[in-house]
Length: 215
Image (cartoon, rainbow, N blue to C red; front, top):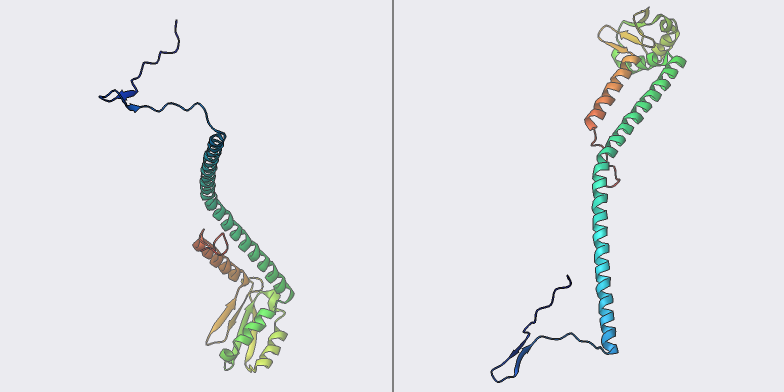
């Protein structure tokens, strides 16, 4: 028959030469006083509390580690989303600006020519002639505006307006002999778009911090 192995006899008591007990292994205590029981109970509770707190701390450490790992994976993606949002916002603002500018040019097509001549007043004041090239649609509306502007800035030279079908809508050129100037809203819008794209590309994913106050 099989059964639990028999415990071998242990010589746990040693005697000295005179027959006295030199060493005896402590025997388990079989009875306790109420105070001892209470002390054991409190010690067990304290040990259990320490073990529980240690387990909670370990769980918290693991959770924080997992959170940090998740954030480490999420932040690069968040930076990409933020950059895409900046690009979208910039493009939307640019489209709105173009729409407003186009509407303003449709409503006041002579205004840019007037502003250009006024800003060049010092350069053209001694010129004998100012030649303005513009699309046929715009050229037909400029004579009165330019005569009025010339009088306002004191320009006494001749103003000659040349319709040019090759000039884009709302675009014009100014030739005053010693110099020239030109305005093309389509080309200006293209330059703004190129500058914006270059700025966003240079900025990349290293724009302002995702969390305010951090750098």
